[in-house]
Length: 78
Image (cartoon, rainbow, N blue to C red):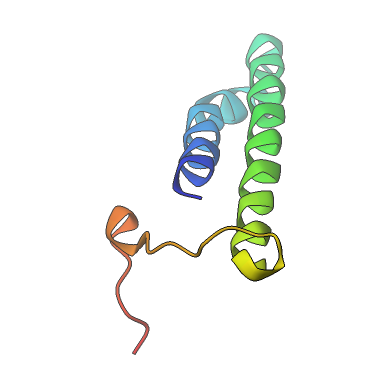
């Protein structure tokens, strides 16, 4: 899960400057932004598939759930 999510975040961060320039009228930046956002879409689908597999659990053909909170500095919601 972690790698697919990281790929998604990287793709979105990479497109930020080009998105702003594209909205400003820069055609080349808009083209780059669309390409980068398409890659983000693919990363989003990969992340979704991994989350679905973890949610099923190994007894139903999925994968073993993993603790990735340390990778993302997630604090307890309590």
